[in-house]
Image 1: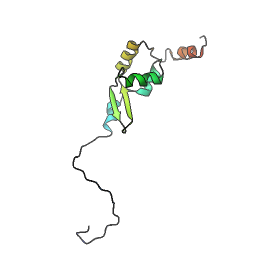
Image 2: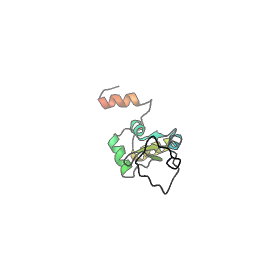
Image 3: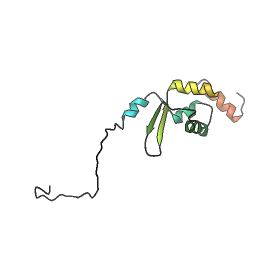
Image 4: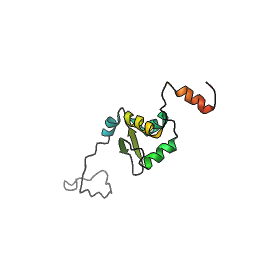
Length: 113
């Protein structure tokens, strides 16, 4: 605009020097994660606590099938159904589903069904 003798409406004082560009599809992971189980859902589907799952992931005892970085310190982790079943079997965890959810809840409360 300066070369044409025009005055810009606004100047952005933001020093940007880019020398290397990389195409990033920030929405591609949603298609990849479709049908997978999030780490939060993983916790709901087995009879162990959140902290146990987090610890096992941190220690590499549970390896997510898909890890999506969201920021420098945050990632979303996803598992295939087969992985959930395999890890539950390997660790002796009971899978929670519609057939046993009520009984497990009542048992947790110490009530006889």
